[in-house]
Length: 328
Image 1 (cartoon, helix red, strand yellow):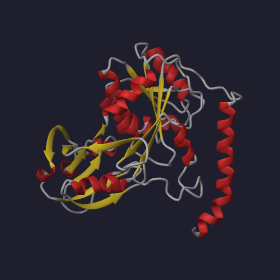
Image 2 (cartoon, rainbow, N blue to C red):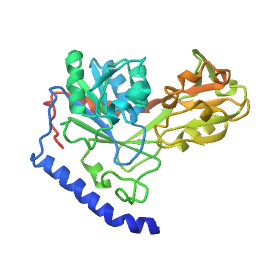
Image 3 (cartoon, rainbow, N blue to C red):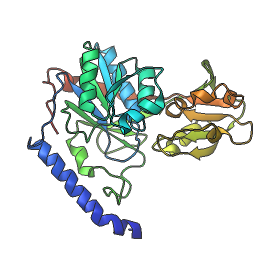
Image 4 (cartoon, one colour):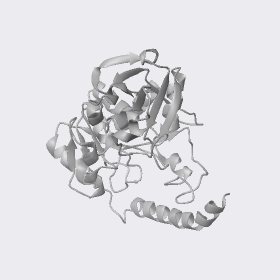
């Protein structure tokens, strides 16, 4: 145990006590959970930072639509002004400003074809979505595992290759809730790794899209150089870099903090090598595409692949279950 961990350990104990007490209050119904009136699927994690929730939400929305459901998606919109200032919920369109609504909701709106709403108050966001889109018959909540105020029918936790770090709660470790919380969810999805119980998820993507021209796609071998600058402002940038290396590219890595607000200078590395980035980062860099340097900017879209048994589990959990059957 490091010296810093020892110093922070008492605070982690206090944090854990608060987490336990809060969940107990919801389970005992001393704090009320709100039922929205249609089934709610919550996708979240127990770790800080991204773990692959957004590709999973897209997969779930696509699976549900293929099965005849009409899903809506709700997110807090982390990193956007709307959430940070506690403004009223808003709908996200493909033309929304990522600085206002957040990068992940904008990506969800562009890729899912489903209504997407954001708001710091996710209950209010769910209600607003239902008023504007009464056709929706199921909601998918992006990053809401700890949002117990909203009752849910299905809980899905995502774990990535980073695992659980040192296994400690905030602030001595990366965990929002103890690992034992996973025993109470309906499914654990393992992104790029494997667990004793759950469903493996793989992110697949091998064609790059030019940021300045979405109609121009190329394979890794046609980027103009096998050596590339790789930019990633996601929860685990190393995961993106490994993906690129698996495509045969020589990666010059440039990790940034999750939800980083990119400036043009962040993408200028003083040479003519291609610059590749994630879709999540690309939605914030569109304004740089028209520059001369923008012609070297490429995006790698990825899609989640899951065992069909996971889809069958969703159907089993949703069919015939009263809305909001799990309060906490």
